[in-house]
Length: 156
Image (cartoon, rainbow, N blue to C red; front, top):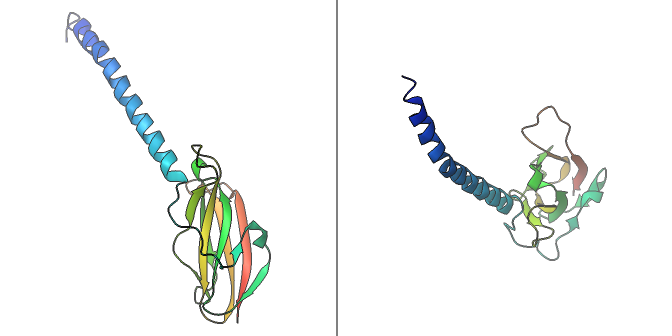
């Protein structure tokens, strides 16, 4: 390639640069709106009235329930920062989740911020189990979780 062609290539690149920047800006804005809208949206309904509703104060405690009883657990979540709650139930024959948690913004007028993650559980058969929940950024395998909540359930 001769030196006389370089100015033509550079000129063509310079003319296309504003278009590339505009496209990149639109893409970034679209991704930002999509992420913000999906991180703490209201994907479910309010917990059923009358269900026992627990919160982070459950940590370290033991609860007793009858068989076939439902209860909810509401925990703060920093989903807009990429934190998600994962859970482990030591015996899913005793207690199970009723699907994935629902996330609801604590201030729907603002983008991002603190959310509430609501877990729905139900008891099945008599027994004992431990429920452990961790809030962490899943891709940060070596970092400790932001929060850990652990409680026990006795089903009679």
